[in-house]
Length: 524
Image: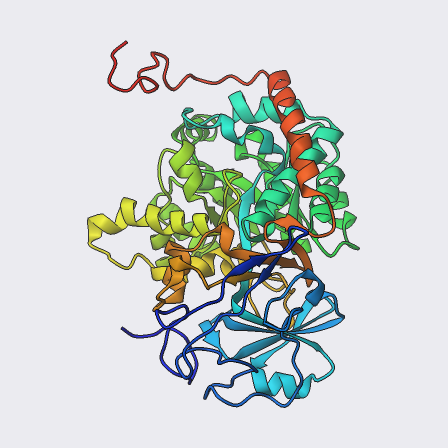
């Protein structure tokens, strides 16, 4: 089978049947060191010691830091340096997974990416950390989130498709500044645990200043494209100028659905975002009910209406877009507007699955989003591919359905582009923000390995993420923050969340009124 790794070394996969030993150990303080991955000499990425070049046998001249215990394990303290030269087994670059690459991180950005020996010789003063058995990859970018809806995500199960008036609006209206902050920080923690280093918040209806959401995201360490809802046409310019000193908050404007604002406000908001290089977020063509309301009120479907009034441009981010006609897809392609593909939201509470494969073919800009359903990047890319396969691929006999690389790219660099951060994050490249994950490859799920891109989409999961970095800083180590008490936050949310839901008086439909599903084999 052809191997995917783009190097000139031996044609082998990562984590193949030749691997022995390795694994994850535990420390008395609860932290975990990641054990050295060992391979048969000549058949893997690393031998018994030293950095290996593409040929596989000669260590570099520069001294290396090979872990705190001399056996190749590494821990949070190994990343406390001004300049870090990180040497994983594999780096996920724009061209795909590549061996024999190192990355230099300094000042929150990638300063160099290249062959191990070359970078080690050029940057001898940097602290070198050998990340044995690990993949260094871009963090996932969530192109559509609602950070203040985290207390209600479990309320969406078994509900009709359009529930914003019965679940989300009451929930957000029940928040005050303290609970909005708590909800947003909980959502940010969940996102980071799932490998998301950036999330685009589509705007809250909570009666609070969005500064509390910015504060929560920054405290958690999540990069955030933060929207302010401006359906009344007020406050947009001030919001876009507000967070200029923040490294993590990128302001955006939002109108939840086109019908929430006048044509004048929609057009003015879209123009303001275009003029200031910000993103205008708006839900479009998500449900049959929303399409029909638009037809009755303005005589056009939501996306077609935005195009008609001149509010569809390269800075527009349309959320969901599950119900698009061929004409509307052409409008997206022609204007350069972006959309978010939210496959889990379609499965949980949608009328359809967006034809993302068609978007991909037509050159429509799109990223993948959770819609706040569950913050797991690997499960999201699996859902993205699976939803296309079940909805379109099977009928056409399409066995590839974009293949693994397409969905990884649309969940990272192309998601960053869709949310207006294509120049900032989304890939391992010089000058981009050092937003990345360290993913354990030394697991049964990825053994043996032949095509890592496919395997990450189909087989990888959140528990393999050893570390999450945002803006060059270690934010999570094995799922928990390194500089604040994440478990205390979870305990507080467990106490506070149910009270907010009770106060909201959410109107749910009982999906099993006769209790038949809860009593298998028994009739009512």
